[in-house]
Image 1 (cartoon, rainbow, N blue to C red):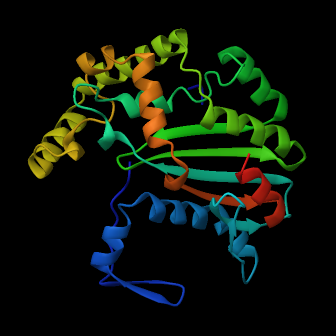
Image 2 (cartoon, rainbow, N blue to C red):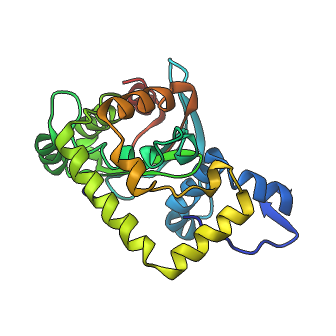
Image 3 (spheres, rainbow, N blue to C red):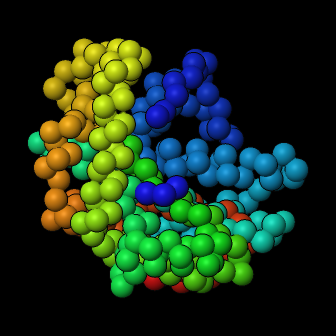
Length: 258
């Protein structure tokens, strides 16, 4: 794609609005994609919260049942969308470690009838910025777009999410980038120490595996592997969405079902 969680200390009880959560509850929820998405929404609206006393978060449900959190904000002509699909690096099949990570680098490398170059040109034409990243338990994506170009930008986002091409040339290019990272990590003392710590903590659990995979595992990944993994993990019932910016609820409902 052309484009970690930090552990902070918690007090014994954490307040969120009028809700009070125990430390154990916060730590448990912090591991879920939905909770992480809620935190993403909070940080998206934080600059506006400093300027305004209150901010309304709407729950929007499309006719086909996709639910999103929406904060309408017309102070700047932009729309930002953040989404997560359940299913990340811990769902990599045995022997295919690094599959989710490799897939996350390919969503802006061609979709639908647009190859990699054509898709990149379209993104530039509409002034949209897109990124996707695989985490342990979810695959996170985001797009920022100009409000006046939101129809075209949402079209590109839909193509990328629903119809990624996974062409061989981009796969080989992104795989080479991942391999360079793996080789660099093999020489990095901090990365090696963290890996040993995870292995000691989680044993044979997938949490102990490196998200990038290994030299051997990423070499085995094929377009068919990517297609199958995408089909298995990018399901409507595992999608969570947060949107901030110059868009109203009725318009968003239509965009969610595209």
